[in-house]
Length: 219
Image (cartoon, rainbow, N blue to C red; front, side, top):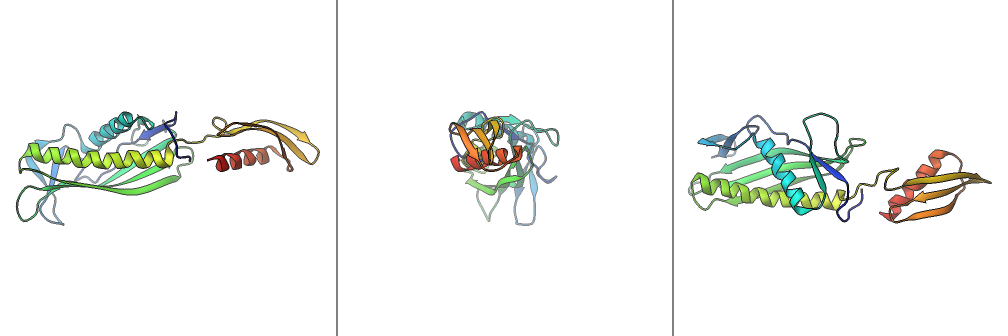
């Protein structure tokens, strides 16, 4: 994985995972560390995980850092890198008095679609105090807290996955010719083409290993 400028790499944003308490249209609130309740007569416009998936897509598209596509809940991969978010907290927390403070906490994994290995993992947090104890101000504080968290996720994803180097596309073996004591290669690197590279080893897989090593050095 190479950090860098915007590229044709596709980031698949899956529907965030959440416990049943948060996987709902109801807006959660907490009055203690061990309880979770909901605001009466108020609701999100969609189930919270679906709403946040849409907002994440918008954040990446507005930032112009990666090509973001929506993923499903277990189907085939449609991107080069998968962003999987697990919600831990997304509720308004009340203290002893006054308006609540919105709390967001989630874990975000960047996963290679090719081999399902985790490229990077991080916990992101955000908070914002509501200016008043009414639903307009409370939802506004949720939006501000979420914007901050989404900006952190976009920056981190761009840092570790802005360009995914794929063998056969961004790098690889262009040609290979047997030679005395090894083989003569033409390699496509991330930064250019390298012709007449002598490799004192035999076999197609040795050429592929050389191309991978070159890409790693150029990254």
